Length: 178
Image 1: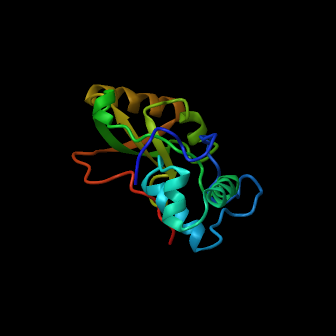
Image 2: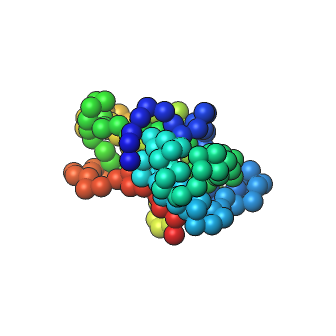
Image 3: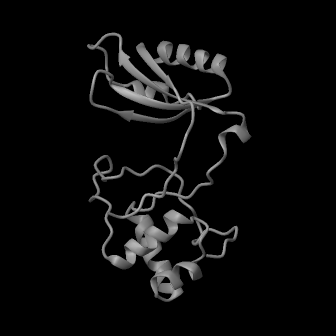
């Protein structure tokens, strides 16, 4: 597919949309048919694909693809478009997973909100097991990681268990329809 600098639509959405609509009260996001699935496959593999590229891939007119793409965005199937950046190139070569557990199980379970301001936290997941959440973080150095862990503990009143990533074999893989 040809690549260009334009997104396939006029306004890329960057806000987070609940994946199942539960928080918004909307019906769960869904793919209606194999054509929608094809559009999602193509745009997941190449977010810079043009409407023409998508049209060729799914054998529909450009206007029909544009209508379907906008509908997929409106329904929350496609929640945004973004560049994937090499972490080392932006000064954050060290990645780690940080499990967090509340120091006081009786305290409010609001750790995600209390930690949202820490830009080094790339993802926060609620998990089953001994810990309550697992964070994926990127920092410049072991010293920066130490400071971030201190900030996490202080901000959310949690204990932490950290696993440093030695090597990443793959990440940011396209999410394809089942």
